[in-house]
Image 1 (cartoon, rainbow, N blue to C red):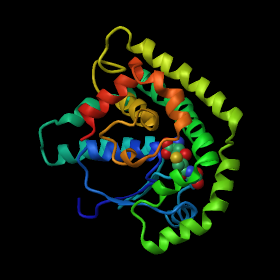
Image 2 (cartoon, protein in one colour):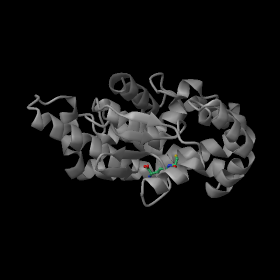
Image 3 (cartoon, protein in one colour):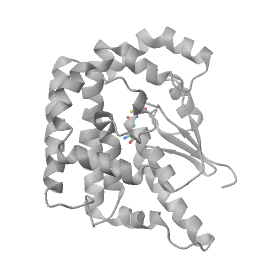
Length: 260
Ligand SMILES: N[C@@H](CCC(=O)N[C@@H](CS)C(=O)NCC(=O)O)C(=O)O
């Protein structure tokens, strides 16, 4: 690739992990940039995308916002590249049908709306409200000294804005925990017939989405960031019994097998 695309991410974000994993899985060359929270809005404006959220992938043909769109781009780009260079089908082949498979798409959309949203609300309702330094430390990763200083100064305001904007609190913590319990139960049930992958007997965007969006709760060893995450004790306690659930074991296996 002559001009490697640039992937803008928050290190702590599970949506960003999903996009990053897809690019890694397809063996694509790219630069990672970690805008500070707040500065990311300026970046989004400069890249001329509709919303403010990351991940955003800036390519030679324009910017792509949102993890699902970036996954699509990665698989299409790598397929086209293989065709142009007459390369034999590689492992991304197993994902080629993902856009046309209704079951896979339904699972991806379900997981984004439920697990994506409630993992974040659950985690931050404890971590940002009661131990916000643990969150700030992850935002400080890969930042210059000046940016770390800026983050420290702006943190009280950012924290307040995130608590309000993401609707965080004790009731929300409980509610999201219950919603996550239902979703993990749905996964446990789906996996109860012994299937290796969620759909079609092969690794697909559904597996990648389930694993990446649950990764803040499972903390797989292969995750590029979460080894440094200091999970608040209350979350550890509340999830202690979940670690051996089929859905959580599935996430660990997908990371072990597919996140190199
Ligand atoms: N559905 C979007 C969600 C992305 C998202 O919510 N990103 C958060 C970080 S986890 C963000 O950038 N929030 C700041 C903002 O929206 O300005 C995706 O899959 O990319």
